[in-house]
Structures are given as C-alpha cells and as structure tokens.
Image (cartoon, rainbow, N blue to C red):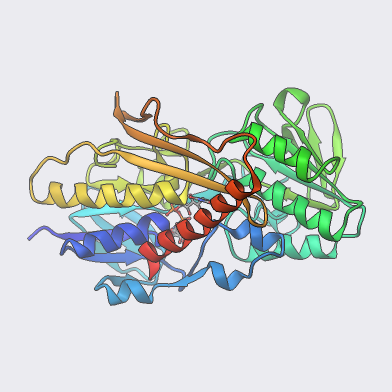
Length: 392
Ligand code: FAD
C-alpha cells in the first residue's frame, strides 16, 4: 500500500512535516545526519552573550518516540524516476512521496574571497552552531574601540530581518561592554525588512554606534580578504576588527542534486501541495522552496510542513488537496526584553503564494516599552511552541 514517505532534513520544516505525516498514520523515515539540531531563531542573542547555546539545541528523541524511523545519514542522491533516496552509506530508501527540507547552503561561489575556509576567519553565523560561537568569541576578544562590520546579502535569503536583529543585539553588546566601538552594516540592498522600525530603534537605543550603508550608497560588498579582514565595496575598502559576512545563499546541495532547484538556485513548487514543479513525487518546503511572498523563516517552514503533510496524505489517498492559507510572523529583538514583529497571511494565486491584501502588518512605529516588552514575551512563547512542535 502506498504510504512510505521519506523526509530529507530534520530542521523546522522536515521535523515538523515528519511528525504530521506520522500522526496521519503514514510510514515515515527522516533522513538527517546530525544527532542534534541547533536552532537559528534567537541565535543572535547567543552572539550577543544574552543566551546559552543549550537553549538552541534539540535532539531527535521526540521524533523517535512519535514512531518515525531515523536515518542518521546524509542523503547523497535522489532518483526521482525510480523514487529512491541514496544515503552516504550506500543504503537506498524507496518512497511513494519524498519531502525535501534541506534548508540553505551558503553560496561560496558568489562572493570573491569568501569560501568555506574564509568562514573560519569571517564567520557567517547563518547556520547556528560552531559559527555562532565563533562570532561570539570574536566579539568577546575584540578591543574596545574596534569596528564590527556586517555584510548583508541580496534577496532572497534566510530570515529577511535577521541581519538587522543581529546588528541591534551586537550594538547592545558593544554599548554595554565596549562603548567606544562602532558597527557598520554594508548592505547589498536599498531596503530591508522592518527598516523604519530598526532605524528608529538604532537612533534611540544606540546613537552614533550603528551605521547602515545601502546599495546606492555603495554598500554592496563585492570582494573580501579574510586574512586582513578587508571588505571591498564598489567605492571603498573597509577593514574590520570583526567581520560577519552573510553571503548570498541557495537551496541545500541535495535539492540541486535531485533536480528540484532551478537556475536561481531555489526550488519552484506548486503553492497548494508544495510539490516540485520540476520533479513529480517530490515536495519541497522551508527555506529551499520558492514560496512567493512568504519569507524564508522557521515560522513559514512550520506552516508549510503541516500544509505539505496534509497534501501528501490527500494525494496518497487519491484525493485532491484543498488550497491552503498560510501565516508568518517574524519577531526581532532590538535589545533584551524589547522586540518588534512583522506578520503576513498568504494564499495561492496565479501559481504562487501571494500576500492576502490587508492582512498582517508591522509593530507600531512609536510603541511604548510595555508593548515592545510584550512582543519580546510573544517571541519567547513562539520559540517554545515552534521548537516543541518539531522536537518535543
Ligand atoms: P533548516 O532548519 O536549516 O533545516 C535543514 C536540515 O536539513 C538541517 O538539519 C540539515 O542538517 C539537513 N540537511 C541538509 N542537507 C541534508 C542532506 N543531504 N541529507 C539529510 N539532511 C540534510 N526564523 C523565524 O521564523 N524566526 C526567527 O526569529 C528567526 N531568526 C533567525 C535568526 C538567524 C540568525 C538565522 C540565520 C535564521 C533565523 N530564522 C528565523 C530562519 C530559520 O532559521 C530558517 O528559516 C529555518 O531554519 C528553515 O527551516 P528549514 O527546515 O527549511 O531548514
């Protein structure tokens, strides 16, 4: 009987989807090489010394308890015609439907000078774990009066407000511990998520400390030298004491290998079922997918996981899945106990996920500290919920 589903990737998308599929009675194997999952949301607080890594780290014990078979291996190949996944120990897993949620890879071919070894000197910290701790240590050992530079990537990338939340929390660290220091954000874009809210917060909380230079001001970094920590822009060269390079990104390598990524490096999908537009029988969710107006967030991956699982159940039963509505909220910390958010609602339209007009919105521009503190508490509650749904 058809009902064998393989899920590649045990992050917010894959783990949540595997649980929903298992709860529907399907036979689910989750392929994930790492024994623990380190969550990115709130990892900017770790970088700023406000949170421990243990609060970011989860095991897969809960998934085993839910009846999911774990293959603690990397998937190395997908044969979409034969409907088989190959693992790095040579095992072949047959499937009736495959869900891929491999997240992103840093694109180490996109920024001259920035490759995997450069990331050991100029961390991206855009996958939580060692990179997060490296950036934290570099900030800790930097002298007071140093310059921290964040290079922010062009769209699309994982977590649109993430670089600016990071800037806020690093600014908080500098203001508290190294007040003569400066933070410069060199951006490949002219506009970014929650820009007016972030800009107002930097002026209010960190006056004179944070400077942002956008694309038209010459902010796009076109080359780096990791040894001298030099960032080259169209008009200028900057030397950093700590350089956080967030490079351009693309879908995880296995998505490209499986043939579900297009020339953009991301994976086009049907917005009702999340089935690949390029390879039937394979669904792609989370950061790897092209989800139209939906951002690449853990919140989005969680919702897509549930919608995709429901669609897989319907398709395996020979029924037609109904069009979904999806929601996203991204919280960003400006300082401890001080947060803002952006929310949206999405539905399929003309083959993509489109914004539902008039739904969603932003935190108020001049909110009281009570409102900002309440949003920070909502952010904590959201993290507990979303990690619980994936890993508890
Ligand atoms: P991931 O969570 O990256 O999971 C992918 C998994 O696939 C990994 O476990 C990986 O090991 C596995 N994998 C990859 N290749 C293979 C393979 N070949 N075989 C088997 N397994 C494989 N989102 C929010 O909603 N709110 C926030 O506040 C927030 N803050 C963030 C802050 C930062 C600094 C960053 C970087 C991100 C933040 N995000 C936030 C974004 C969020 O982390 C991602 O959107 C989310 O992790 C995407 O989930 P995913 O399942 O697509 O990918």
